[in-house]
Image (cartoon, rainbow, N blue to C red; front, side):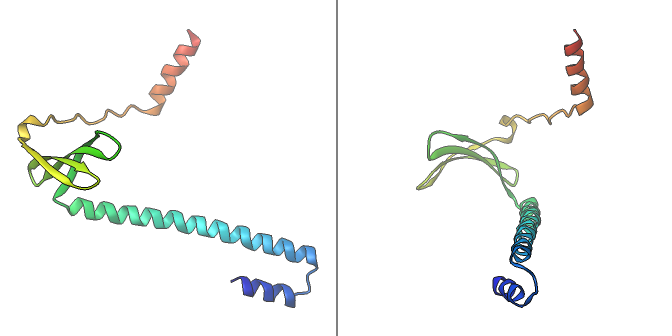
Length: 126
């Protein structure tokens, strides 16, 4: 791409300042194009990953860090739950947890933004 720009500059009737402005425009346009391409690629990769995870029978339900390179992972395989110890060097089976001992987490309650805004406004008035 850059040899093409040099060819255009050498063969155009532009003055030096016009050539510099043209190069600056091309560089900025290229940068914006690369940013847009990166954003769409990231979205595409994320959607492809979510698609494969939806089909999976394995799911990490929760994890807890126990140090710099160690932790516990609760993994769901089908309808069974396993507690695993995970370090940098190995993964260790600790226990199978019965399904009825795992508490169901309530879904997050979504409050509309307008309600938060109204609460904030009422605090300012009083």
